[in-house]
Amino acid sequence: LMSASTVCVGLTFYIVGKLGAGKLISFFPTHAVLGFVAGIGIWCGTMSVSVSSSPATGDDDDRMVSNGVFGVPFLLSALCTAGIRILRWLIPREKFMLLDPAYFLSIPILFYIGLWAFQIDYDKAV
Image (cartoon, rainbow, N blue to C red; front, side, top):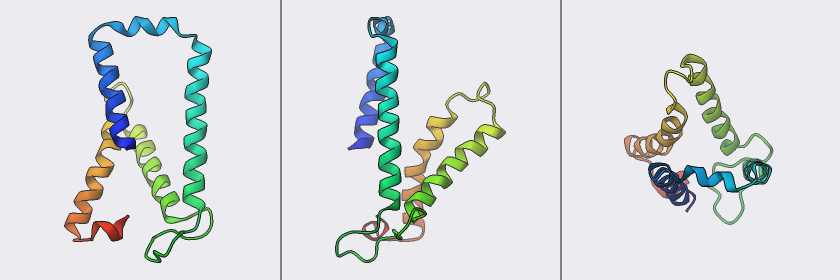
């Protein structure tokens, strides 16, 4: 659902840009827009830490979540973040502006390629 909404928002922004309707943003107060964006960032950060540090729930004992702050999801998030930081250090923003989106879009693709390559069952992977 989050991926679908991200694609919809991206397409909407693309269409708004192509129609030249970006000037409509001037009707919204800057401090309100920044407040909403900051609130979304705080919510995403809080939820990612709570999901990463919570123990597995339910009857499924095969989940790869350990107790404590440094569970597997947290470490995977840290690995992805370190990857983009290293790429940003190696490649300046002026050279390749779409590096961040390309990198983060490649993560799920590489995930499914890895599942296929190592013949891991999808249900056991998630």
